[in-house]
Amino acid sequence: MLSLFVIMDDLRKYIKKIQGLNLNNIIAEVLRDVKIQDYIIDLNQEEQLFKKGVGVDGQKLTPPYVETYKKKKASLGLPTSHISLYLYGGYYDGWTIFIGKDYFQIMAPLAELQRGFSLTDFLTGKYGDYQGLTTDSLDKLRQKITPLIMKIFEKKLSSF
Image 1: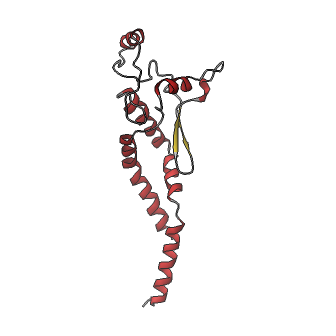
Image 2 (image 1 turned 135 degrees about the vertical axis):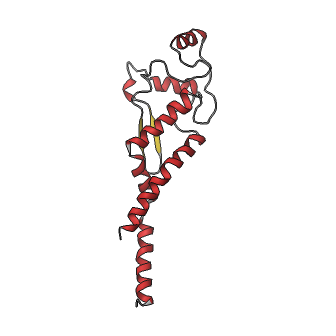
Image 3 (image 1 turned 90 degrees about the vertical axis):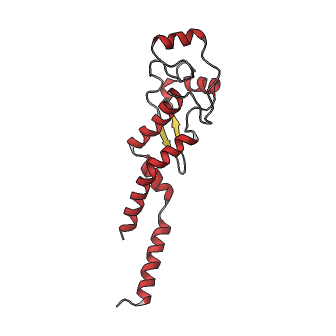
């Protein structure tokens, strides 16, 4: 039979282990997964920009395309009813995720800087903040990563 003191000692150790877990580190571990990073970028590029033409705030990007550009996009079978920042796909290539201590940031390629011109800076100046997730996209991300976070959390707790 276990004494109450042994049980209490085990419980204290368990509580200390739980307190030692850093949720931000667990979340960062999940976000480092390439499949999760691809999912985040897809939410930004496909769901927000290509399909809806919305920025981080969920509002339509403005100003609209000029008529000559709309015709070029239409000739390629691309949407013209909203800003998608997509023509041939080159700008969408190479987006990455930077993972900070308690945040992540979606970043377009820095290699585009040529002769002092940055397409990302130009587009951000024209259309506003579009590199990031809307509230709806963040909800989808939470639904996707919560089970993964819980799995890691449970694994770490069961290791003692």
